[in-house]
Length: 459
Picture 1 (tube, one colour):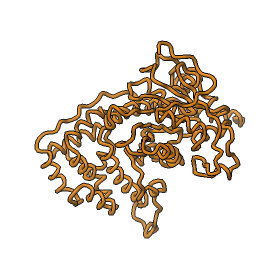
Picture 2 (cartoon, helix red, strand yellow):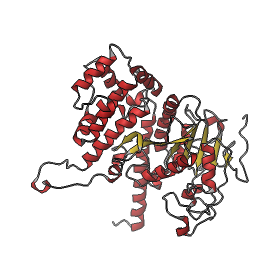
Picture 3 (cartoon, one colour):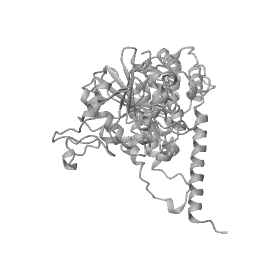
Picture 4 (cartoon, one colour):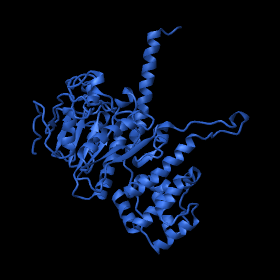
């Protein structure tokens, strides 16, 4: 008996949804908190142990900076260093590093930071060169050391992407393979990555990038991107561009961390499921403690999320986290199963939301509860939230969009921020929406929208 085409289509859709649901359930299992592992203590003469590791390493140099430069000039050496693993049966320091590596997903970043504080700045810098594959992925390790380690990770992954990994065959001889484009563009750049995993997201990659100077910034924002936040997506450069406009405009007062350090959904079907955000939210919450430990207690932190990233920051607020204020930018929601103040660990934390009229995201904001589906309450209506005005795009003849393309050439100078394109227009530099986002990031007074949600009870 033949199955009519429409029945086959329905069956195909049902199977597709079931597979996505199962994928979501798998990631939900990943989100279950594992018990934290103890961070090893240092013992013996640490300086001597580092010297011993240096003597056995394939890289030379009188200081870690020189050794790093030498490794970056030699792709083969960079790859060898990234592949190096500390010997658990070696010195006390090597054994400690091996323990940290094996337990990196279940460590308290603050305790890891204390480990490296005791190790000392110079020794830490050496370890970022000698064992970049370990230091690059250790939450709590000093950002500077992780940034250096990730330079080597990028170099090694870039060169690996151009190699032929299959068996030797006559037709592979003298065959050049282009390097992976998103990695190749980073060679020689000044971009700084606290984390960069080229192989996460089924090869799409994940990252945490720093823009600005944490040493001098008086305000820090963690910006969580929307869907398809992978190295292989255009969002990799787009959110860099967006963050850079804010950092440049603040004149040294602001540093922005673009946080895409987890598995990420791609496409509207995956993005409608909550499971990816459940995994990411827990990791993000942990990262905020890492960030606070490294910048000190006096620098305010803004946690901002765009689109799907709003669902991530919203759900992160159900965990213990560090944030002085929260900003939802065209957000998908307050987080899976977040519908009231009782769902948040700090209901009275200052909270802002900005969504333009006609933004398509409004169709998914505030969906009723369905297991594993949707992203909770609408941030624009959530009690205590300050809704921000979106206004108009800049009317300056030099105004550009978030790709750097002239607004004048597009014929949209001064237009009202609304409709389908408003989901991105809120990031166009010097627009009213962009100015309001920057004001929140700097701890200044933004322009509120005409109507506001009810106050948060008890706040």
